[in-house]
Image (cartoon, helix red, strand yellow):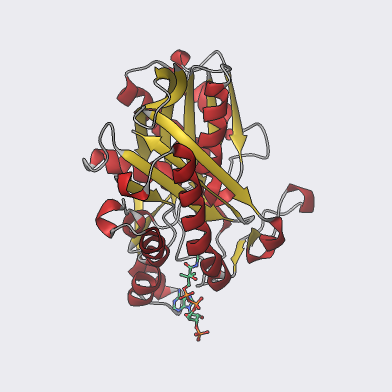
Length: 323
Ligand code: UT7
């Protein structure tokens, strides 16, 4: 018998306010046509004034608990991936813990920018496989609207706010690739590329800062690194690309999503795409897409799902899940 971390619940939350591309035309030298054709984004959600990352994460966590039919105290841990926590400390995860009424276990944040959910899943999987937890809530939640430079058309039209959550539970599998649960993970980072995507502020500099990106440079790395990490994870899982039912990629740019699928030899009808409606929600993009993919009836129990993401660091990775 092999212990596996199996997805038993999923949920998401998007702030009420939807901003269409055309809204940016009033304040910036940009157009709906440019944003659509260069990124695939049509609209995004922005959090209301006073609405924080932990608020979005709490709503997603509550949806995942309801989906799983669980109470908060059925959880052993919360792992929350974010680069936009409410406060410097305590963690947004502990705020979610209190908000959902979880009075046991432990909660912490983890930061790997857009690759954050792949890192969070990998860490939650390790907690479960090592016997340190039986049920873990894994959340990706962001309010990137708070770190936008609204005068920089090269970045501020690309990002959005939102949250998604999965609940993983330890279950016994046979040790084969037919098992439900996380079958393999692959993480990478290369700090030499820190200047292509970063925020020019932080606690130690006593500023909040704004997101800065050399979009073309990130693009240049993305397809190759995403296809390579996905392949590495597929190999570790003992499956082949032909076995893959769904790619659920980080939703940054439709051209990166298409290029990665093509490089992996998979058609776009096997890709869950939400970038048109959410924009780039950083660590929230994969759990949002997983939850929407389930809601749309795309992802079903038993399907082989490949998630892959890249972002600031650079940090990138992939996770193979038998749903
Ligand atoms: O999630 C973290 C990972 N991040 C990513 O994966 C993002 C990766 N990069 C990208 O998605 C793309 O590089 C962008 C969507 C950011 C940009 O697309 P691009 O095709 O690489 O365009 P570009 O940056 O080369 O810009 C082309 C032109 C430039 O004008 P010139 O220099 O050719 O005259 C830009 O100034 O488009 C201009 N431009 C815009 N025009 C209208 C840049 N932003 C805008 C805009 N509206 N919003």
